[in-house]
Structures are given as structure tokens and as C-alpha cells.
View (tube, rainbow, N blue to C red):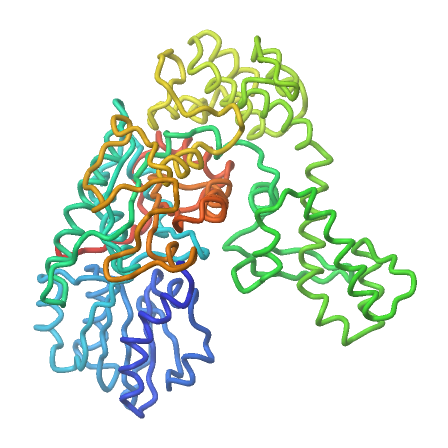
Length: 574
């Protein structure tokens, strides 16, 4: 599991342990990436207990505190190293420096730092964590800009970005203590998955060859699958009706923070993360199931508080109850958040999503609810185009129509663009060709069957565990020591005898990496397959997590020039 515990342990064994050896109060200095990383696994109270009294931004102006030691936790980039040097040249801002890099620091940067202010550095270590745990079985590289860098025809840093992602994947494997066999999805038009697989394979070999232990690490019972985003263009643009995916698609949730107006008129916000166990329990359920559970939960709690009628089944009634019962308020806080969020989702569903879903499902599946084949996809699409849906909703439906036909004619494409009124921004549709999709031309390339309206990646996960994945479509960059099969006979890593299902699961992992973003639907599949197959743990990750709106905007932006925003750079030993 990619729990906070895994990260906390890595940080605990290095930064925190060194802190305990010193009784002096210290300042902690972070860059943007390490700020997010530390926030995901530590609280300020945890830091205070280790005599860390201030947390500062590496790139902001700071007053000198000469009586304090400074802990620098940063990525090994020229920008970070230059900022560090500036803190000690011409005059030091702190008593001493304890430097911790997320990953291997290149020799040139290390030497530059040592020559400039070596006398101030007491510790310099690499802790080998440059990925971001998002959930128990989901990780990202925290790099949304990778999408444009990799897919834009105007990109100037595609290979550098793939190299960065490879370095981050190496630290993921090292943190999990895995040396996996690597496979990738073969695509005649796109080489990204193949190139990234080769990079990761080479860097992993170098990493374990240069590991601290004198004994060379053997391959473990794990597989790493690398796919391109164009491998399944349908799943990330469908309207999804499970709670988490629906909420992030329809509600304005940023940085996992849900903002809402309470019944008393006050603006409130809630963090949707692993600490909210109700969220963890509900997030993969269908919105109908979530909505059905809410009155039941409230009824049970109101009954426990001796409410005779138990008629608290909406937000307004609940608010009245909470005002009268202060002790009850704390107990109901978590449930109130999800009452509100679920109601917000259902409002969108009732307004337009329900009708859109019917058309989207028919186009994606290729058949209606009764199983009858959709003979004329245009008849399914037309009502969507004629109704006053949003621009993005119409674009999503048009794309599903095009994907269902594996491309359309130039004349028809132009008519569709006119219908959606995006003549000035046709890139929303045309730029899918940069992901290897057929927008205009037709071809007979085979895809995984979408007729069950299941994210394609789920079929792949199941096929890997059951050892059914076609080796021609999914070549081995490097193989595992033993083949997997569907009987539950996947052996655990060497010197470990599996005695229970959980033991087997921790001993065998399937890691999926999607270049160019993953959807919440695909994240859910990792949990579903792990529960159903019971022979391995599935972990899924990407450069970032995307939503339909974000993906469409990213697609449109591919026509623009190179990005000017900061991109995380990580160097490794390879």
C-alpha cells in the first residue's frame, strides 16, 4: 500500500532520526514538491515534537536566524541548489545546514554546493522519494505539465520529461522494495510507452547495482505495465456515476478541497482524503447507493440520540437537529459534508447528466440498454447536439461518436465542429490525433472490448493477473522470475513463504503507469481488481490525475508553444 506510513517511515528513518540527535530548535525549508510530499504524511504537531519550529519556502525571502540549524528537504535541481547556496553566500542565514534530497543529486550540483558552502553542511543525504502518494493504491508524479511536454508537436522537452518520469518511477519501486518485470503497450503510432519502459528498465538496473547492499538485488514478483493515454480515450471523457469520479467531474473541487455553503450561510470547506473514512468507504460506490445510505445513517444516529420520529432525511432537517444538540454536532460533521456533496451531485444528475449518460453509454458500448446494436450512432448523438448542454458536454459526446466509428470523414467532422460552435477552437477535437487517435482517417486497429462499459485498463489488470495478456501487444522489456497465473499461485518474493491471502498480496504487485493522466474511474479499478482477484495488489499511477474538463483543456492546449511553468526535475544514478 502507498500509505502515508510508507512515506513517513522513509522520512522518519532519515530526517526525523537526525533531528533527534540534536537538541537545538530547527527551521525546515521546503520547495513546492517537498511541501506537498511532507503535507501528505506529517502534521505540524509531528514536526514540533521533533523541535522543528518553523517551516519556510526555499524560494521566498527569509530573515537570518543564526542561532538555529536549518533542514533543507528539496529536489536535486539546479534551481533548488542555487537557492540553497544563496542562503549561505555571502553570509549564512543559519547556524548549520542539514540537506536532504528527494533523490540522487548529480555530481555537478553536489560539487557546486560543496565548494560554495561545504563548511556549513553537517549532513547531506538522498532519501529516494520523488513520487506523490495520492491514495492507498494510487500515486502521481505531480506533473500535469508532462501532458503538453509529451504530446505537443511543438514540445522541446519531451525526452527530458520522460526521463524525469522514469526517475520518479524508480524511486517508487525502491520505496516499495520492488524490482519488477516491465511490459508496455505496443502501438505502431506512438513510441512513448516503449521509450519510458526502456528508461525505467535501465535506471532500475543501475539503481539496484549501486545500492548500499553489496549483494545485487534480484527481480521480485512484481510487474510494471506502462501505457499511453491514447490507449483508452473513452473512459476519461465519459460521465461517471460513482461518487468520487462524479464529484470531481461535476463539482468544483480543487486540491481535494470541497467548498460549500452551509445552511447557516457560512462558507465551509472539507478535505477529501484518506483521513475521512466515510469518504474512503463511499467513494467507489454508485451515487444511487450513496444517496440511499445517507437517510439510513442519519436515521441510525438520530435513533441513538432518542429522536422518536427519525425523520431527518435532508440537509435542512439535519441542520435543525444539530443546533439543538451541541454534542451531536461533532459526531455528524463528517456525515453532513457527504450529505451536502451527494446532494450537489444529484442536482447535476437530475438537471442534465442523466440524459447525457444514456447517449454516452450507447455510443461507448455500441448497444442500447436492451443490448441492441446502435446501427446509426449519429441518431444517438443528435439529441445531445440539439439540446442546450454545455460546450464541454457536447464535445465529450462528439468525441465518443468519433471514437465509436474509429474516425469520421473530414466533411462530417467540420459539420460536428459547427454544431458545437467551436469553429474558433477545433483543437478540442482535432488534437486527439497527437495521442494516436483516429479523428478523420479510419483504420482496423483492434481495441479491448468496451461493450461492457468497463475502463479498458481493468480488462488489462485482470488479464495480467490471469497471465492472459498477449505478448505481441504487450512486449516484455524485462521479465519477472516466474510467470503469473490466475490460480492464486503467484509466489511471494524470495525467502518469504505466503501463508495467507494478505501475505500473497504484499508479496506480489502489479504497478500500472499511464503516461498523460489517469481518471478516477481507472483509479477505482485498482481497488476492484485487488479485491476480486486476491492474488496481488494493484497500484496505479500517472504523471497526474485528470478529469474530463481538464483533459479537454489539455488537448486543446497542445497547439500552443512550450510551457513556461516550472517542471519538476529529478536526476538519478543512471
